[in-house]
Structure formats: C-alpha cells, structure tokens
Image (cartoon, rainbow, N blue to C red; front, top):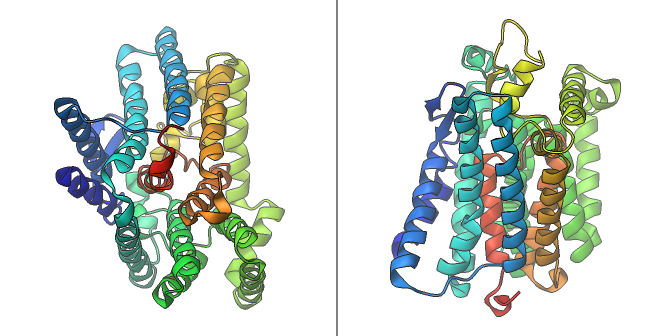
Length: 399
C-alpha cells in the first residue's frame, strides 16, 4: 500500500494550488488537481484491494447511511430527466461521483495508515496547512484586491485573506480545521511548535474577515475547551474582544451581520431561493447538483450573469442545497448520514485526541455549511474525511 500512501499525501498536498488551477470539463464546471488526485487515489486503492483480496475495513454504520443518501441523490437526479436534458443530467451526476470518491478517503485512510504513523500524517497535513496559510498572507499583502478576477466568475474580494481557494470563507474554514489539528496535538503532546502553529492559524483566520469562519472557529474552540480546559474558551473570547476593539474592519463585519449588510442580504436571498425551490419540489427535489440549471429555470440569475458564476451551482447553505436538490427523502437520508458520523466520532471523545480532533472539525463544518456550501467543497472534504478516517481506531473495526 506504499503507492496509495504516496497518492493520498499527494491529494492532501493539492490543497496548496487549491482553486488556482481549474480544468474545464463541462460547460458550467471544472475540476481541480485535488479532484484528479483523489480520484486516482481511490480508484487505485480499490483496484489493488480487488486484486490482492485483502480484507477491507470500513465503518459499516456510516457506510450504510452514506449509501442510503447516495441512492436517494441518484434517484432524484434520474427523476430530473423530466425537467432537464440528458446532457445536463449527465453533467450533474459528476458531482455525486465526486462526492463518493471524496468520502472513500475515509476507507482509504483506515486501511493504509498505520496507528503508529498517525502523528506523522497529521504533521504532514499541518505542513501543507502552513504553506496554504503563508500563500494567503502573501496574497493579502501583495494582491489585496481580487476584483480583477470577476471576469472569470470569482467574487471581488478586497483586503481579505483568500489564499489559493480565492475565497475567504472556504479558506477560513480550512485554516480553522488546521488550527483544530494543531491545538489538539498541542494539548495532547505539549509541544510548543503546535502552539506556534495554532497562533499562526488563528491570526490568519482573523484576516479572512469571514463571519462564518469565526463561528466555525468558536465552535471548534468550545468543543475542545469543554473536553479539555475551559481556559481555552476564555482566552479565545478575550482575544476576539481585543481584536474587535482593535480592528474597525472586524467591527464592520460583525455589525453587518445584524444590520443586514449587502453580504448578509445576499445570503438571505440565497436561502430563500433554495427554500422556494424545495417547497415546489418537496419529495424528490430538482435533482442532485441540477441546482444551477434549476436556478436558471426559476429566474434566479441576472441577465449579466446567466449561469451564476462559480457559486451558481450551490446555495449559501449545504443543508438547503440538499433539501432543494433531493427533497425530503434525500434530506432525511443526509441527516441520518450525519448522525451516524457524529455517533462514531463522539464515542469516548474526551479520552481520544483523534476523535476530539474529528469532532471539533466536523461540527465546525456543520456550522459553517449553514452559511456557505462548504460541506461539498473539494479541498475541505479531503481533510475532513481524512480526519474521520483517522479517528476510526482499529480496535473498533466491527462497529
């Protein structure tokens, strides 16, 4: 399995180029190096398992709920043939295939990563995270205004850390996940390097000026603090208070959430559009990942942006997106899938640092995904599914 380990670490490393390298494969979408690497990793792993006839370990309860959701998503997409062209359905089905491949990172990591090597893998992830964060710091210094990228469908972010994902919200959650890993490792091993990394990640998250990322960070801190030490929560809150008083831009971002600034209004509009589509397609939805075509059909795009840019295929809530595209049946299966994950990673969480890490990161993702469609984001998925796989200790392979 050495080859699979190389491919898996390569998949993690592709976080560094992020969304900068995008290869168009359909009229309204593209794939990244992370997509390609994950696909190669998973397919090669399955092939080697098949020919070697080695036992395959996987978390059965999660896997069954995952299959249930995938079947419901596939059924909703097939039913969407009544409303969309075969080419549109074929294009939409690629999203489900990608989601399946990313989830299988859980299975790959369980079967190829040895328990005594887990810390080395986490160190490798943190190394990638530091490079990713450094890119973001250089970007906000050298290229603070990204409005020139609007012609390629990107949002015009100014004076915000976006790194190679070219988006402060997704980058903020990813850096928050790196911080979670570093902080838990520091509490577990008391190595000062992890504390330094935590400080770097924390400072970088502030520079994203992403409110959803601030919430994700606080979610992780509260979970870790409740399990390990309430001092962590107090220190983080005090730091946030100091930062709020010291930074006018942080004040504006936070007050904007209550005063309904332009970003908040756009988010409300996105939620309303998704719920309107959900109400009109209550049982099966409009079809998994047909959302861009559905939005175009319902007139949600402007004339000067007929396909909605890079964000046109999603809603500003992963849950609302699942509801609109798969209906009640798919949303129910999705919630069962999430519950099965939570049950696994929270078992003995106070005494298992890997599960604490996975729990804090996963709940941060769930909170964040209510404001941005981050649950299905490639560079985020590859890290989250790896952490969940690592948290699945070999003693519980019968679970």
